[in-house]
Image (cartoon, rainbow, N blue to C red; front, side, top):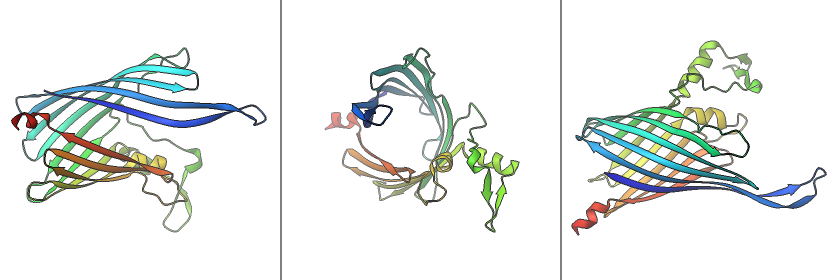
Length: 251
């Protein structure tokens, strides 16, 4: 059995109070924190089951909210070395106490993923389907009802264009090169279509929806870095250090 503990914290910074004529009357802060405890267990080398329990606390000025949510997942290894299939149900739960009298449910997301490593090339690709619990996840912005044609003219999107766009909003695509004799160096990249469509700015070029990263293995430790581009305003950076504690028992 494997266990893990994680802590996520988002600090939204300081805000200013202001009255109806714009005079500042002080400051307040806002943030969110999630404590995650999880475990996974292999069953007969072909199936792995896992669960996360998340306690989530949110504060905005004098308003507070607390909630509990659970992630449940399973991975089936089609063959031990090259391909696997996974299913995850995320965010089962909701608020216990909220900013107002109405408690909201956590944003449910059912995902199905397939990963395959090529037999004669040091490359692994993954395809993830998101939001399987509902089909239409397209946001129809009234300001973007028309699309640009090849000749620079504005034309309305057809029903087929809308359905195709909605279909690919369920998908994200990822790839990873496994380099070195023992695969100790890895280069990764990914594309999330819904993030690209909803967070890019039409008049500005950006890498919204794309992500990239590298990973090293040094002795018993793995060091990974990734950058995810959400918007022209910037990207989020992730650094992970991991190890297998069982290996230290053999020293």
